[in-house]
Length: 406
Image 1 (cartoon, helix red, strand yellow):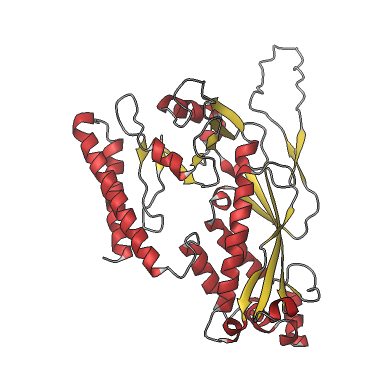
Image 2: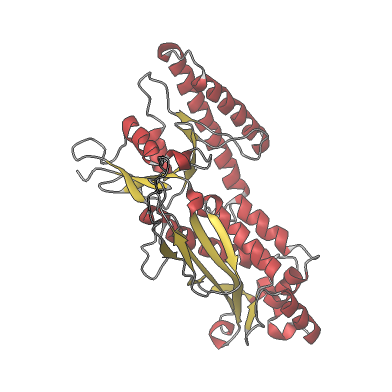
């Protein structure tokens, strides 16, 4: 059976389970076995899809997702783009491979200044493709607010918490009361990220049938995607971005001795959901964020009526598709969120659009062909990018669950 057929089969089963869980007359004795069997079927289909995918993509790194490969190959073969065409030519031949006229095209398609000696400031269309492909890593770029600036100058955003403010009734001929608005600022600095050097054999560069651009771009995306998503999630705000889980305030802290050192209860999840002000929840953007290991745990939790609180999702690229849902809100799996352990910030909930990721558009790439690489029959490539992130909210748009210490 093809992967597409399996995905369609999975979607049908997931939709049926969604209808089952959401029906009004839930009967635990009758419906729970049907739910459990459906979940088992979905897990079996997922395993089958993974096995087929592993065989089809055994030449790719296990962590490199299909969307990243597709985006890289599409850009590498897009000969209608001057930026992509010249970028591929530069990868193979270096600075001297481009004519003066082609360098003019490069400068005209770049987001900032001219390339330095031995370097290539990536054209805007190429840079945008790289940044878009980074969404496949971890999920922060999918749920956060992403902005792009042409330079990395310091930026500060004004903040003000008005969640407790309210107006008043004023009697006739009386003056209105004063209530000053408190303002603060939150910085959004950028940091310089390196892909680390990617070495490529001469033979691969010389083989015109190899999509060298997709190969190198894919490696850059893999490395930069992993490190930036980690920092956007759990960065410590010291010489790296302030991660959303780090910056968020605590919504629920499990009490010691409550069996929630490596677990979470239904009541704690409800409390966490309601620790976020309704002003955020009613906006329709709230979601859960956790490690896949934590998803495994919450899948087993039931409410007071013994109804499962987890509803399996189905492929978002299938018409009518939806993500996994917990207590009515979608789940975003992010492997950089801590697994459940003593005192771990293991679950985030809220409107993650209040976390802002800032990209500086100029991506600089370097090509090394000196003796260090030449004697090994290789050419080295290195990418630099500048990015930062911070939770630009003081009203509690995102809250976290903290496991018990003991």
